[in-house]
Image (cartoon, rainbow, N blue to C red; front, side, top):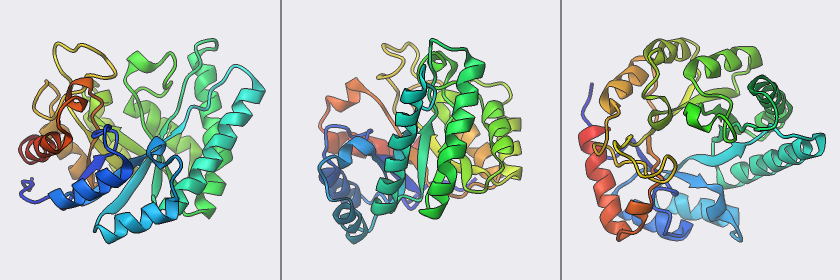
Length: 275
Protein backbone atom coordinates (compact mmCIF):
# COMPACT_ATOMS: atom_id res chain seq x y z
CA UNK A 1 0.00 0.00 0.00
CA UNK A 2 1.45 3.34 -1.07
CA UNK A 3 2.41 5.67 1.76
CA UNK A 4 0.82 9.10 1.73
CA UNK A 5 3.89 11.28 1.33
CA UNK A 6 1.91 14.08 -0.32
CA UNK A 7 -1.56 15.50 0.18
CA UNK A 8 -3.06 14.77 -3.25
CA UNK A 9 -5.75 12.53 -1.77
CA UNK A 10 -6.41 14.42 1.46
CA UNK A 11 -9.86 15.93 1.87
CA UNK A 12 -10.89 17.78 5.02
CA UNK A 13 -14.51 18.24 6.06
CA UNK A 14 -15.38 21.77 7.09
CA UNK A 15 -16.91 20.32 10.28
CA UNK A 16 -13.38 19.19 11.24
CA UNK A 17 -12.35 22.83 11.54
CA UNK A 18 -15.77 23.99 12.68
CA UNK A 19 -14.66 27.36 14.14
CA UNK A 20 -13.65 28.53 10.65
CA UNK A 21 -16.07 30.00 8.14
CA UNK A 22 -16.25 28.41 4.69
CA UNK A 23 -14.02 31.21 3.37
CA UNK A 24 -11.41 30.63 6.07
CA UNK A 25 -11.50 26.89 5.46
CA UNK A 26 -10.92 27.35 1.73
CA UNK A 27 -8.00 29.69 2.32
CA UNK A 28 -6.33 27.66 5.05
CA UNK A 29 -6.79 24.25 3.42
CA UNK A 30 -5.28 25.52 0.17
CA UNK A 31 -2.40 27.20 1.97
CA UNK A 32 -1.61 23.95 3.81
CA UNK A 33 -1.60 21.91 0.60
CA UNK A 34 -4.87 20.06 1.18
CA UNK A 35 -6.47 19.14 -2.15
CA UNK A 36 -10.08 18.31 -1.30
CA UNK A 37 -12.89 19.90 0.69
CA UNK A 38 -16.18 18.42 1.82
CA UNK A 39 -18.66 21.15 2.60
CA UNK A 40 -21.05 20.95 5.50
CA UNK A 41 -24.33 22.52 4.52
CA UNK A 42 -24.54 24.98 7.41
CA UNK A 43 -21.39 26.77 6.21
CA UNK A 44 -23.26 27.81 3.03
CA UNK A 45 -25.99 29.71 4.85
CA UNK A 46 -26.32 33.29 3.56
CA UNK A 47 -23.64 32.61 0.94
CA UNK A 48 -23.69 32.86 -2.85
CA UNK A 49 -23.03 29.18 -3.62
CA UNK A 50 -21.71 29.86 -7.12
CA UNK A 51 -19.25 32.35 -5.67
CA UNK A 52 -18.12 29.76 -3.10
CA UNK A 53 -17.66 27.30 -5.95
CA UNK A 54 -15.43 29.80 -7.75
CA UNK A 55 -13.41 30.51 -4.60
CA UNK A 56 -12.81 26.77 -4.15
CA UNK A 57 -11.72 26.33 -7.76
CA UNK A 58 -9.50 29.41 -7.70
CA UNK A 59 -7.81 28.09 -4.55
CA UNK A 60 -6.93 24.84 -6.34
CA UNK A 61 -9.26 22.72 -4.24
CA UNK A 62 -11.75 20.10 -5.37
CA UNK A 63 -15.23 19.83 -3.90
CA UNK A 64 -15.50 16.19 -2.83
CA UNK A 65 -19.03 16.14 -1.41
CA UNK A 66 -21.62 18.02 0.60
CA UNK A 67 -22.90 16.90 4.01
CA UNK A 68 -25.53 16.06 4.82
CA UNK A 69 -28.86 14.98 3.40
CA UNK A 70 -31.24 12.26 4.45
CA UNK A 71 -33.24 12.09 7.71
CA UNK A 72 -36.14 10.53 5.81
CA UNK A 73 -38.07 8.63 8.53
CA UNK A 74 -40.74 10.69 10.25
CA UNK A 75 -43.82 10.01 12.35
CA UNK A 76 -46.25 11.76 9.98
CA UNK A 77 -46.76 12.04 6.24
CA UNK A 78 -46.42 15.81 6.39
CA UNK A 79 -43.03 15.57 8.07
CA UNK A 80 -41.87 13.05 5.48
CA UNK A 81 -42.87 15.41 2.67
CA UNK A 82 -40.93 18.23 4.30
CA UNK A 83 -37.88 15.95 4.49
CA UNK A 84 -38.21 15.19 0.78
CA UNK A 85 -38.47 18.90 -0.02
CA UNK A 86 -35.40 19.63 2.08
CA UNK A 87 -33.39 16.97 0.26
CA UNK A 88 -34.48 18.30 -3.12
CA UNK A 89 -33.31 21.76 -2.05
CA UNK A 90 -29.99 20.28 -0.96
CA UNK A 91 -29.57 18.66 -4.37
CA UNK A 92 -29.90 22.12 -5.92
CA UNK A 93 -27.32 23.47 -3.47
CA UNK A 94 -24.93 20.61 -4.26
CA UNK A 95 -25.23 21.25 -7.99
CA UNK A 96 -24.62 24.97 -7.52
CA UNK A 97 -21.51 24.48 -5.41
CA UNK A 98 -20.18 21.68 -7.65
CA UNK A 99 -20.44 18.77 -5.22
CA UNK A 100 -20.49 15.44 -7.10
CA UNK A 101 -22.40 13.68 -4.34
CA UNK A 102 -24.38 14.20 -1.15
CA UNK A 103 -23.67 12.15 1.95
CA UNK A 104 -26.94 10.77 3.30
CA UNK A 105 -27.33 10.38 7.05
CA UNK A 106 -30.46 8.38 6.44
CA UNK A 107 -32.30 9.05 9.68
CA UNK A 108 -34.47 7.09 12.12
CA UNK A 109 -37.67 7.78 13.99
CA UNK A 110 -37.90 6.54 17.59
CA UNK A 111 -41.70 6.34 17.53
CA UNK A 112 -41.74 3.72 14.77
CA UNK A 113 -39.90 0.42 14.28
CA UNK A 114 -36.48 0.12 12.69
CA UNK A 115 -38.09 -1.84 9.85
CA UNK A 116 -40.49 1.05 9.21
CA UNK A 117 -37.63 3.54 9.35
CA UNK A 118 -35.68 1.51 6.80
CA UNK A 119 -38.73 1.31 4.53
CA UNK A 120 -39.12 5.08 4.69
CA UNK A 121 -35.40 5.53 3.94
CA UNK A 122 -35.71 3.39 0.82
CA UNK A 123 -38.81 5.29 -0.23
CA UNK A 124 -37.15 8.65 0.39
CA UNK A 125 -34.00 7.86 -1.57
CA UNK A 126 -36.10 6.49 -4.43
CA UNK A 127 -38.15 9.67 -4.55
CA UNK A 128 -35.19 12.05 -4.79
CA UNK A 129 -32.86 9.94 -6.92
CA UNK A 130 -34.16 10.85 -10.37
CA UNK A 131 -34.00 14.56 -9.55
CA UNK A 132 -30.46 14.12 -8.22
CA UNK A 133 -29.43 12.23 -11.35
CA UNK A 134 -30.87 14.95 -13.59
CA UNK A 135 -28.86 17.53 -11.63
CA UNK A 136 -25.65 15.50 -11.93
CA UNK A 137 -25.52 14.81 -8.18
CA UNK A 138 -25.04 11.32 -6.73
CA UNK A 139 -26.27 10.03 -3.37
CA UNK A 140 -24.02 8.23 -0.87
CA UNK A 141 -25.67 6.11 1.82
CA UNK A 142 -23.60 6.34 5.00
CA UNK A 143 -24.18 3.57 7.56
CA UNK A 144 -23.89 4.91 11.11
CA UNK A 145 -22.84 3.17 14.32
CA UNK A 146 -25.72 1.27 16.00
CA UNK A 147 -25.68 3.70 18.93
CA UNK A 148 -27.40 6.13 16.55
CA UNK A 149 -30.13 3.70 15.44
CA UNK A 150 -32.78 5.46 17.54
CA UNK A 151 -32.76 8.83 15.82
CA UNK A 152 -29.86 9.40 13.43
CA UNK A 153 -29.83 6.37 11.17
CA UNK A 154 -31.51 2.99 10.90
CA UNK A 155 -28.76 1.95 8.47
CA UNK A 156 -26.04 0.68 10.79
CA UNK A 157 -23.84 -1.83 8.96
CA UNK A 158 -22.19 -2.16 5.58
CA UNK A 159 -24.34 -5.24 5.00
CA UNK A 160 -27.50 -3.17 5.41
CA UNK A 161 -26.12 -0.47 3.13
CA UNK A 162 -25.16 -3.06 0.51
CA UNK A 163 -28.60 -4.69 0.68
CA UNK A 164 -30.24 -1.29 0.30
CA UNK A 165 -28.00 -0.39 -2.63
CA UNK A 166 -28.91 -3.63 -4.40
CA UNK A 167 -32.64 -3.01 -3.93
CA UNK A 168 -32.42 0.59 -5.11
CA UNK A 169 -30.52 -0.62 -8.19
CA UNK A 170 -29.15 2.70 -9.39
CA UNK A 171 -25.64 3.68 -10.43
CA UNK A 172 -26.45 7.17 -9.15
CA UNK A 173 -26.42 5.78 -5.59
CA UNK A 174 -23.39 4.58 -3.65
CA UNK A 175 -22.05 4.03 -0.16
CA UNK A 176 -19.86 6.16 2.13
CA UNK A 177 -17.55 4.07 4.31
CA UNK A 178 -16.81 5.82 7.61
CA UNK A 179 -14.27 4.27 9.97
CA UNK A 180 -15.81 5.84 13.09
CA UNK A 181 -19.10 4.08 12.43
CA UNK A 182 -17.87 0.76 11.04
CA UNK A 183 -14.50 -0.17 12.58
CA UNK A 184 -16.13 -2.64 15.03
CA UNK A 185 -18.05 -4.71 12.43
CA UNK A 186 -16.73 -8.33 12.20
CA UNK A 187 -18.09 -8.59 8.64
CA UNK A 188 -16.67 -5.30 7.45
CA UNK A 189 -13.93 -6.66 5.20
CA UNK A 190 -16.29 -9.00 3.35
CA UNK A 191 -18.92 -6.28 2.96
CA UNK A 192 -16.32 -3.81 1.65
CA UNK A 193 -15.31 -6.45 -0.90
CA UNK A 194 -18.97 -6.84 -1.82
CA UNK A 195 -19.35 -3.10 -2.31
CA UNK A 196 -16.14 -2.95 -4.31
CA UNK A 197 -17.34 -5.71 -6.64
CA UNK A 198 -20.46 -3.62 -7.26
CA UNK A 199 -18.37 -0.45 -7.73
CA UNK A 200 -20.56 1.28 -5.15
CA UNK A 201 -17.96 2.76 -2.75
CA UNK A 202 -18.39 6.48 -3.27
CA UNK A 203 -16.55 7.91 -0.24
CA UNK A 204 -14.14 6.97 2.54
CA UNK A 205 -14.19 8.91 5.83
CA UNK A 206 -11.61 8.58 8.56
CA UNK A 207 -10.96 9.62 12.15
CA UNK A 208 -10.42 7.51 15.28
CA UNK A 209 -12.41 5.93 18.09
CA UNK A 210 -11.04 7.11 21.43
CA UNK A 211 -10.92 4.88 24.47
CA UNK A 212 -12.10 6.12 26.84
CA UNK A 213 -14.30 8.68 25.18
CA UNK A 214 -16.07 11.60 26.82
CA UNK A 215 -18.87 11.89 24.24
CA UNK A 216 -20.10 9.52 21.53
CA UNK A 217 -20.78 12.38 19.13
CA UNK A 218 -18.37 15.19 19.94
CA UNK A 219 -15.21 13.36 21.01
CA UNK A 220 -13.97 11.72 17.85
CA UNK A 221 -10.24 11.20 17.76
CA UNK A 222 -7.58 12.44 15.42
CA UNK A 223 -6.15 9.48 13.55
CA UNK A 224 -3.74 7.70 15.89
CA UNK A 225 -5.47 8.88 19.08
CA UNK A 226 -7.69 5.83 19.36
CA UNK A 227 -8.12 2.13 18.71
CA UNK A 228 -9.66 1.86 15.23
CA UNK A 229 -7.59 -0.19 12.73
CA UNK A 230 -7.39 2.69 10.28
CA UNK A 231 -4.61 1.46 7.99
CA UNK A 232 -6.15 -2.00 7.77
CA UNK A 233 -9.57 -0.65 6.81
CA UNK A 234 -7.97 1.72 4.32
CA UNK A 235 -6.24 -1.28 2.72
CA UNK A 236 -9.57 -3.13 2.43
CA UNK A 237 -11.21 -0.13 0.78
CA UNK A 238 -8.37 0.33 -1.68
CA UNK A 239 -8.13 -3.39 -2.42
CA UNK A 240 -11.84 -3.14 -3.27
CA UNK A 241 -10.95 -0.60 -5.96
CA UNK A 242 -11.54 2.74 -4.26
CA UNK A 243 -9.03 5.37 -5.41
CA UNK A 244 -10.75 8.56 -4.30
CA UNK A 245 -10.07 11.07 -1.57
CA UNK A 246 -9.40 10.05 2.02
CA UNK A 247 -11.68 12.38 3.96
CA UNK A 248 -10.95 13.52 7.50
CA UNK A 249 -14.18 14.08 9.41
CA UNK A 250 -13.72 14.88 13.10
CA UNK A 251 -16.37 16.10 15.54
CA UNK A 252 -14.42 17.17 18.62
CA UNK A 253 -15.12 19.81 21.23
CA UNK A 254 -11.54 19.28 22.40
CA UNK A 255 -9.95 19.92 19.01
CA UNK A 256 -12.31 22.80 18.16
CA UNK A 257 -10.98 24.70 21.17
CA UNK A 258 -7.48 24.74 19.68
CA UNK A 259 -5.92 27.21 17.30
CA UNK A 260 -7.34 25.70 14.09
CA UNK A 261 -4.14 26.30 12.11
CA UNK A 262 -2.28 24.15 14.62
CA UNK A 263 -5.04 21.55 14.49
CA UNK A 264 -4.98 21.45 10.68
CA UNK A 265 -1.25 20.73 10.83
CA UNK A 266 -2.01 17.93 13.28
CA UNK A 267 -4.61 16.57 10.86
CA UNK A 268 -2.06 16.57 8.04
CA UNK A 269 0.59 14.84 10.15
CA UNK A 270 -1.90 12.22 11.35
CA UNK A 271 -3.08 11.66 7.79
CA UNK A 272 0.49 10.96 6.70
CA UNK A 273 1.19 8.60 9.60
CA UNK A 274 -2.05 6.77 10.23
CA UNK A 275 -4.65 7.30 7.51
